[in-house]
Amino acid sequence: MHREISIFNFADVTLEYSVIGKGTPILVFHGGHSNCHEEFGYQPLLASGYSIVTPSRAGYGRTSAITDLGQSCRIYKSLLDHLAIEKVHVIAVSAGGPTGIVFCSTFPERVINFTLQCAVTKPWLSQEDKEYRMARRIFKPGAEKRTWGMLATTNNLLPKLTFRMMASSFSKLPFSEIQKQIDDHFAEEFRKMNNRQRSYCGFIIDLEQTQRDYSKELAAIQASTLIMHSKNDNSVSLSHPENAKALVPLSEVFILDSWGHLIWIGKHAAEYDNALISFLSRANNTR
Image 1: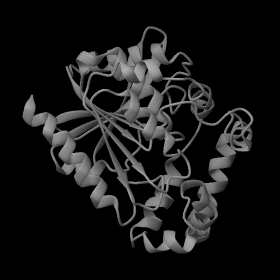
Image 2: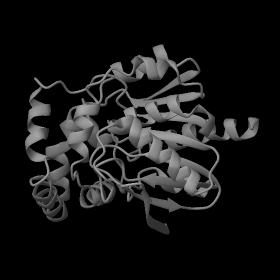
Image 3: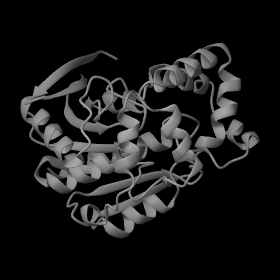
């Protein structure tokens, strides 16, 4: 997978981004703790003839810490201008959901279609939740590098134990049931994920942006929208795809009976890949 990583400077803002492949472009807004090095679900898309543009979202990687989501989306649109890309498929993942929602509602003329993947679509962790308070402590700038360094070290030494310890944050299933849904490649993909992830100040920005109500923006989305989620997701509840389906005019829901939040790995990954590529292909055939 040949990835070109570049920097786009716009006024006083720095945007890090990667481009992989040749073909119809997909703009990916990655999830929390990720960046332009994301790779979950990429290989089947590349094999199907798509290219993938992945900006490190605000505060992640080398991208400036922009707290205004509207400003961030204007810069992502300027990146498309810089790359001479007229229209894109848009995919928004997990905590990147609000970014995709605001981008698609603000720049409908640049969007072929939209896919939400296990995505936040309404107020998420509240400030009273213990998960929110813990995240503010361990993923804040100054602490997050140490957090991810310790996790990567543990995961590299004891991958099975690390996954078992973290599994409940991703899945509502008991571990005995999760084990039935993971395949031989799972441990390595999970290990690689924990080695490439960093929060920088991006996740703190995400925690604030996911407090908002995006009902108005969801209702303004004009593009055909595929809402993908796992029924066993314990990171982002099923109320989020239900909320998007109720508000986005041209939307359909695909709920996987997969093990949890990371729908790109495990025995149901091929089902996810086929559904997504079918959705993207339908739009390409009608253009």
